[in-house]
Image (cartoon, rainbow, N blue to C red; front, side, top):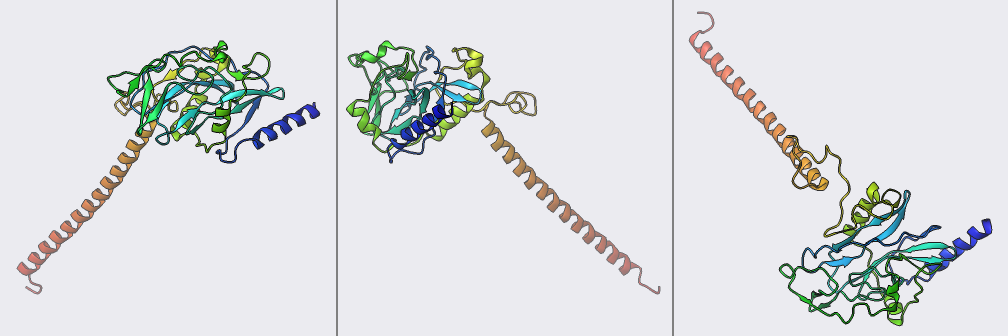
Length: 303
C-alpha cells in the first residue's frame, strides 16, 4: 500500500514537471473514482458580443464530485480562446487538469463537450479584427443581439473521438483514448492565462450548492448551463430588504455596497446631527447671554 502511494506521488510529480514553464500555477487533484458521465443540456444563448462559451464539467471537492455549469464568460483579452479542463487517468488515479486561456485551444483529453468543443480544437468561432465571429452551426446565438455570425456545418462531427459522447475523462478503462495532436502539443507549450475572477467565483458558487453535488443529483445537476456565472448562495434574510420584499438586484455584493453606503450616509447624518446640536447649543447660550445683558442693563446693581 505504501509503495503504491509512493508511485502515485511520483507520477504526480512527473505530471507537474512536464507542465510548460510558461503556464500559470495550476492545482492538480487526483481521485481514485472516475468522474461521472457528462449530463445532456441545452446551451443558453450568448448574452452579449465577445463572450465565449466555457463547457460544463465535473470537479472534485470535500463532498465529492460536483458539476460546474457551462457558462458564457468574457475572455481576459481579445484574441484569447478557452481550453476546457479535463480528467486524465494516470497511474491508477484520475488527475484533474485545470483549464486555461491562450491564443490557441490546447489538449483537453479528446472529451466531447459539445458546442464547438468536439474533442479536438474548437469550431465554435474565431477572432477576426478584434471581434469574435460565432459559428451558429454549433453555438446558440441570437442574431438580434450578436451580429457577427456565420454558419459552417462542415466542421461539425468530423472527429473520430466523438463516439464517446458522455465520457468525462481520458485514458484508462472506459476512457477516451486520444493523444495530443501536434497542434495541441504546440498550444500546450504556449503562454497560458489562468481562469478569470468571474470563472473562479462561478466554480466556488457551484461547490457551495448542494444541488450540484453528484451525491445529491446522481448525475442530473440542478443547474447544467447558464448565460452568466453563478454567484454564491444567499440566505433568505440577506435577499430581503427591511420592508420584507426581495431585493431586485439579488446580489449580495450589491447589497453589501448598499449597506456600506447606508452606513456611511448614517455616519454623515449622525455627524450632521451632532453639528446641528452643537450649533443649537451655541445659539441657546448666545440668547441666554443677550437676555442676561438686557436684564443687567435694566436692573443696575445697587439700585
